[in-house]
Amino acid sequence: MTEMSTAVIPAVRRSWVDRLMALATEVRAGEGAAALLLALNVFLLLGSYYLLKTVREALILSESGAEVKSYASAGQALLLLFVIPAYGALASRMNRIKLITWTSLFFAGNLVLFYLAGQAGIREGVVFYLWLGIYNNFVIAQFWAFANDIYTEDQGKRLFPVIGIGSSLGAWLGAEAAKYSIGIFGPYPTMLVVAVVLVLCVLMTRVSNNWAVSGSAAQQRSAAKPLSSDGGFELIFHDRYLLLIATLVLLLNIVNSTGEFLLGKLVTAEAIKHVGAGAALAAARGKYIGQFYGEFFGAVNLLGLLMQVFLASRVLKYLGVRGALFILPIIAFGAYGLLLVYPALAVVRMVKILENSTDYSIQSTTKQALFLLTSREAKYKAKTAIDTFVVRMGDMLQAALVFTGTKFALGLQSFAAVTMVMTVLWLTVAGLIFKEHLALEARQRKIHGPSV
Image (cartoon, rainbow, N blue to C red; front, side, top):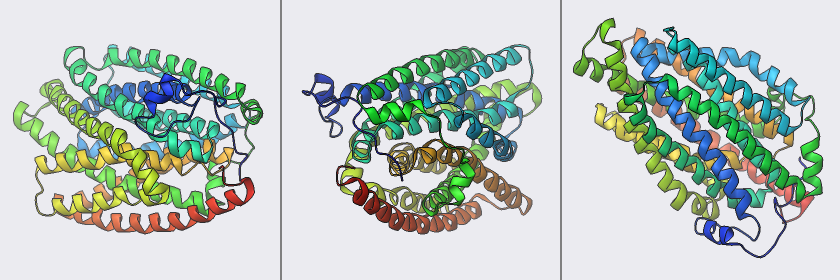
């Protein structure tokens, strides 16, 4: 389906960077420096996102509450119906480095505008929530599309886990930093910091691109040309493998978002209990909620980092991409089963820490590796559509679930039971992807040989 790229850096003697990174996964001669730069890039992207994510929670929960937060997620899916085709048209007119550069600078400019609006006293919690859901999925999808574009399947399975360490470490340290910064400075100055970080990430991506094209004639051709005119949605609906990935991501997000709703509901109640209700106390509630989520995200990402360092590469090595698909849904099924018995804040917090840390480490690395065998158009356009619109569509369906459940006064245990049903469907789709990936890999090896 795709022209397979070669190594980012030509084979040479193993450097000290190669040997250092080999502690986490198999790194061959000449691969370490490029993988390290990509790890640093995604470290900054995830670290800065978690600063914004904590800002997001403080703004929307203090201004509107957990129900509005769930409903706002649905608005992201509606916006993406227009954003995805526009992004696809842009990708058909630009090469990959121009595409990444201009979209990143666009988002950096947005953050400056949010800062100015916040300083002017405008209530922007819902708008910022809508924007951040689109922003995060776009920049992360672009990063992993680029990584998929410059690595072969063999390289990706070996190096994605170590690149993912940067992702997990950035998320953990970003959450830790947010825990303190939001209590001291408040949310708005953080937005300017992230805008600067985005510019730095663009510069690092350009260096990575230069390294890739300098080591491969195939990469020179790939880097120079825009993608075909096929749109992201069109690619998904005409490819069973991509459609199954989209379905898996949809179910995963419904399950995860429902858990986030349960946590947000309990945290908001706890904030009212400790601080009090009323509009005059919104700022104090926001600070309480922000500090809770800072600690929560810190715990999630510390555990996720440990999983990424010690488990992710070994899971892919011994279970493969296909086998790794089943780990998170099995954990989720057991976790929400526990909530049927103990529906308390401490239990929900523990469940979400385990679920999210696995999602951000093993599951995230596995999901990225699913695209190694796809076309370049699928890597950029279909992957972006899946990681943005499909994720947000999951939020939209989850919002409908919350609306219906709230209307009929469902309790936490009832929501947990519904989530378990969705997890069974998730496991079924993982089994179908297992078969499709096996067949696709066999076809690729027949075309390109065992080296892919």
